[in-house]
Image 1 (cartoon, rainbow, N blue to C red):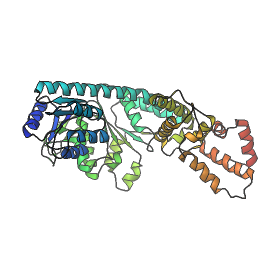
Image 2: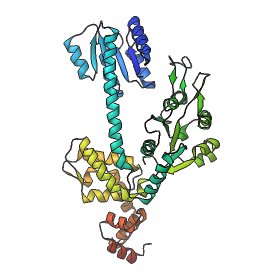
Image 3: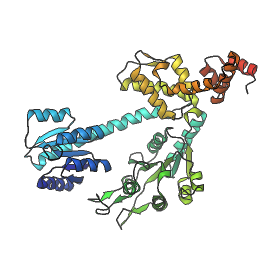
Image 4: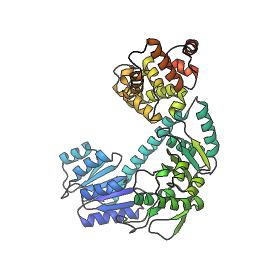
Length: 443
């Protein structure tokens, strides 16, 4: 089943196409203008838009350009009774999947739509495969803390226990959730993601539990929710702390009983959906502040896994950076790039408040902007050098060279997990660092 949006100012065409595609079990919405189409696209994701070329307020070509700018993954097929070579070329250049001429039979348009959806499905499979390949090394680690976490996660994955993932933003909680699904007996069933921060309370309730036709403005037909879509699979709720008090109550019942009613519905729906939830907040503190239900917290807190911040697994920074650089080089059609000694030192000195996500962005930027075959410090974002600049700025101008060296060595040691790691950051051997630490009396 796909989500289709039909846009045509001719009522009969709009109605016939909607009825036909609904009979094929697609989720269909239909509007009479490009303006209304864009409003609907703001609230709902569609796989494909089937739009007329000539319309009063906004042409199909203008709508196409707007869709491709805002929703590049959505396919668009243009329909017209006034076909010309110029309009066809303009449509394809603007990113249309296809361009069909009226009159056409329902079988002809069905064939075109099915071909488009099949191609989109292949693209989605390729993206999923690429993500699987790209994400795997992100969870490899030389850090003892991370290795213990992964061992526990692999054990927990084979159960049906509810999992709570905690840790700072950008540490890779979503990647771990997806990997746990792959490790689980549910691996061949759906893995569904719900981001609790991106939708209003009403839309999030509908996204989670589904809704019945007429239950609110815009609910033009029955719609299953994401928990229902994940039946026999896994639902990953990202930033669970952002659920409103009312939705916490409704979700608590689901976690306890694995059943719910759609918005506006009376029929109780029962599913077998495994829950993995994630948050970057301290949920116990949220409970203490009465922002999060205590009973829901204990239901979610069956197995809690804390993703360590990147600065807590510093031995992983350079291996991760090198792997990300290799992937970014291929993605941006660059020759094999490598990190210079200066760039490596800068990556190791930085504290990475944005964690793995920030490291990925820094490496991607460097891979795109570097003019050579080696990443230099100048290719990295300025923010990586701000901490060091601010630390130097705090040292009095009257300080001696020895005082500056002592301050810098003390800071690097404080940010490093081992003496070996600190020595690597400072660019000296461990024996030299040990002597300097003893000389300056640094504990």
